[in-house]
Length: 290
Image (tube, rainbow, N blue to C red):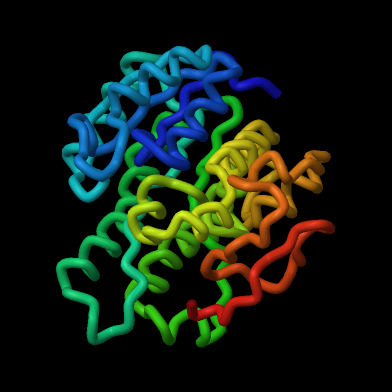
C-alpha cells in the first residue's frame, strides 16, 4: 500500500524522528502537515517547520508548515483545520512530540512535570481528538504514537516516576483507542530498542563516543512507514519495538541504521525482554534505571 496522496499530520516534525518519518512518507508522494513550535532557528537545535517542509518537498511530497503548540487547544484546532483545508483531509496522525526529563522526584521542578504531562499525554489526546473527524472519513486511518510498551514493573518507575508516568499516558491512549475504534481506525505505538541519534540527545549526552552507540532516526521512520501502510481494520493495538518489527517485515540489514556499525548499542528506556534483540544486535548491558 502506498502513501501517495495520503495526508499525514506529524507533531514535532521540524527535526529528528518526526522529520525522518515525514521524509520517509514523502518518498511515496504523501502530503505532510508539519506541526511543531519551531518556526525560527533554535541556538542548540537545528531545523524549523520551514526547513522541514523544504526537505519533505525535496523527498517528493507536499508539505504544509504549521506552527503548533500541542499544549494549546486553539493552536491544535487551527493546525488541523489548515492541514485539512490544504489537502482535503487527514489520513494519519503521528504523535511524535514529547518532553523528557528523567530525574528522581526531588529534582523535578513542577514546571518540568507539567510540561511533560501537557505535551506527552494531554498533547497526544488533544491532537488525536481534533484529527478524529477527518480520520473517520479516511479509507485507511491510522493513529501512531512514539511511546513504549506498558511494562508496569517498578524498575521503570522508581528512577523517574514523573517522566515514566507522562510517557505511559501516550501508551494508555493507544491501548484505549485500539479498543474504542476497533475495526475502523488503527491505533499503534512504536518504540526504539536503542537510543536514537538526534540533536536533542546529542545535547544531553555531550559525549561523542556515546552518540556513536545510537541508531539513526531512519529506523523509526521505516518502522512507522510499515505500520501506517498496513490495513487499519486488521493491524491495531500493537506496541512494537522497532528492530524486531522490521525483521518481521523482511528488513534484516539493521547495520544500516547504526551511527557506527559494529559497536554495541546503548539501550533505551522501557524496553522489555521480549521480543529479544534480533540476531547479531549487540546491546550494552546497563542497569535499566540508567
